[in-house]
Image 1 (cartoon, rainbow, N blue to C red):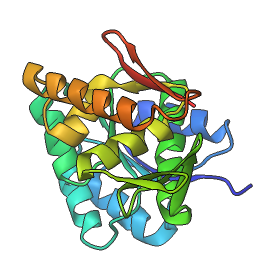
Image 2: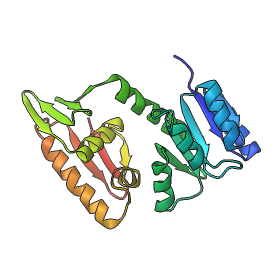
Image 3: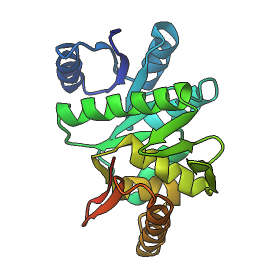
Image 4: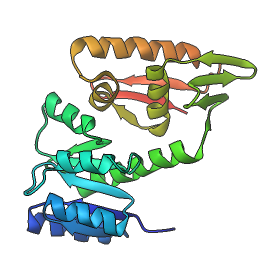
Amino acid sequence: MNKIKVVLAKDEASLGMIVKESLESRDFIVFHAENGDEAFEMYQKEKPDVLVLDVMMPKKDGFTLAKEIRLENKKIPILFLTAKSQTVDVLEGFNHGGNDYLKKPFSMEELIVRIKSLLNRIELKTNIDTIKIGEYSFNLTKQTLEYTSEIAQLTHREAQLVFHLFEKKNEVLDRTFILNKLWGSDDFFNARSMDVFISRLRKKLKKDNTLQIINIRSFGYKLIC
């Protein structure tokens, strides 16, 4: 199995080296940059599998760097490391091309899980047109759920929600993350809207009684598959 190549952009040299060495001890290849310009050069030279970007950096901040990279590469996973936790900051990260964010302080275990999750997501989108979910066939591109000969057409948001639930199957899909990702905000009204979407998906998946979408109170949802 090929090692995962990471460009880590973090201006705190000592902490950056700790993260680098921790990842390398777990069989990653890590290129550490201490500012945005250096990170962009490493991205172009090393062709990494994933970018882990601190938001606050000298010369070029993480959001600006991600925006520039997205002009030439729409697919590479970008994960932001940030002390900012307000909804507006999270949304800004997504709007600049980020795929995920991790709040400081964080554990190495969580960072590794998030990196691998992003790479699995890209692999699914790239290599699998139709995904088997129990007895159903799910097509993200066509936004359809097929059971035997019956085909249900999904809305764009329903299809994205199914995809993220499947990606985290048998694990908890974080409520705040998916609200910010698909609804743009984790406010009360959007949360109620998502509950309605979950109810619709339960009905559309009910023909396979081995499938369940369960509510993990205050945390999110889990697709039992």
